[in-house]
Image (tube, rainbow, N blue to C red; front, top):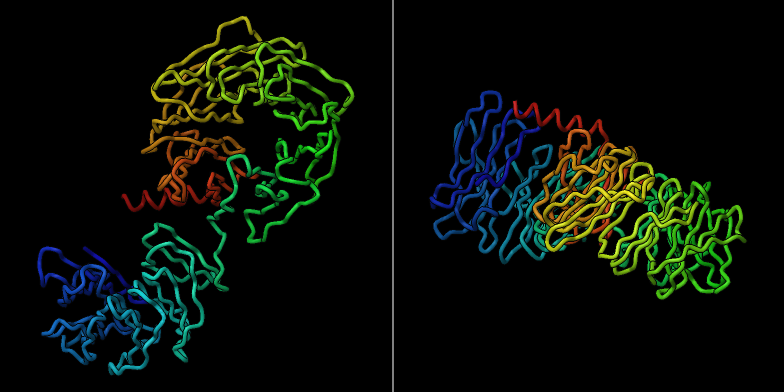
Length: 570
């Protein structure tokens, strides 16, 4: 088992720390000549402590090797070997109940720092030329997993099993900062001097980025507040999102910038937000008798119109179509009518009567010509032609998901059939024709509609992502990749990428729609993530709840990564 690797700054030598489970004295440090690929020398190391213990460093001039030793009483110490002669130049006093968990050599080769474990988790600093003890750094309460000097040698950073990362000033050997955020042992830490970032990772599986000021960096991955439920994160324009925290006013968050939440008390309570439509339209209830429609322009919401409701009651179901400025709402769980009004003629109402009460889940087609409604339980669905008032689809059984596709010309309905599913395609221009149906195994979960009118996607609890042509009502291809259920699903704004959400170490999978190739898998938090969304500019991926965001890789970055992988394979 190789537990540690380190290069010389000039890349000429590589030090390998290897640990064996089969041989008591099989543990060794190997020095490799990179140019020849040959092992130049081997040095036995103690088996004491197992694979997490030990370490080695090589001096900048390639003349000295620093590693751990062991005496006859099984006490560990540090030693220095002359690589030219193989002779030991010095060793430190044996350390009882400490051991060596990791080593770091300062860039100028003057200082050797060694981490400890077991009952004594102190960091010790030595004169690298003589082995003289210089300082003991106390602060960690559990074994030290990694030590790294900054490039200028003025700082030392330590990561430990006590879930902390600590910074030390090498001029005084005093602690200057402690970073906390991991939920388990921190095993590794790395520094990017140019970006002024520190990265850490460990047993909890999280990779965390920290800025120079010690704050967690938002570049690449960000956790959103924990109290946000499934319908409480609404993408706005660019990479901004509107958050609807319970019991508070809505708040604005820019996912590309490490800026604080901006509260929007002028909107009222988050509970009064009826929905976000398109990329810049917000509809909310004024708490009295009016539905307000506002547009996000120039960093603020500007009211564009209002619809007054005679009942004075907040709508139970609601939908808005930006293309036609058309609103639809229902008045209660027992109501059998759906009402429509336009901002252009706000005093005029259209009533769509239904034989089914409680149609509270409303969805307009993109062109605003059709409206689909479903009960909360999903046991009935009705769809209307808005212009004629004609019912164009009527389903009296459980509907798990519904979407409009092919530019609003086709209604797509996914239904569970026992442990399997059926997906139906209704031609809305010819409502008298029976729908095209495709059956397959596993229960359905989410539907996603592509900007390409020839494509719609369905995720299943069996882990498949299935692509369909809605105009033909035919399966195009099934994509396999998830070990568990595929849940949330969304096409990127340009239609070239597709994300599917699951949970655990495969929270998000990113797919190339044209090639059906899985581009990457992102780990995060949460075991069952039913919502997947893109920012309006396609630069940020959102899944939840718990809600979290990633910077989406560009096509250039994807191409570069694939070229690098191909080169490695060759």
